[in-house]
Image (cartoon, rainbow, N blue to C red; front, side, top):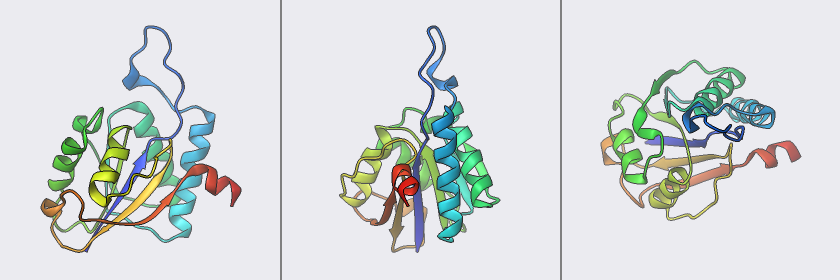
Length: 164
């Protein structure tokens, strides 16, 4: 069995005039969201051996804060293909994961993350910033990850954690 955790980056600052989208940092709310999600991951005993992350600053900051709060040491792989990716591009990145990894966290952006969730599970849940979705697959090879074969086990939004 394989588990894919999809995490949309947390809330970022608005782009300053003349600045690049890829260099947008998390704002205070986003930093708090990422830490809360990391704490949730730790309390739920969710684990993963690999993080696939967009090279965008807001995604890198999200991954770092989540890992620290979750108290998880995982290999982090930054992949340019994740930035502004379509579901097909994300599936390509996932399909290249080494088979000895049973669980992977993918940190990326919308609309690709919502579209990937829909493609893999048939579930059209919205993924606001900082949202985590856990998808289980009943096979042992990442190369077999294709559309509409995963089971959405849970989806958690930062505002639900704040309320809880």
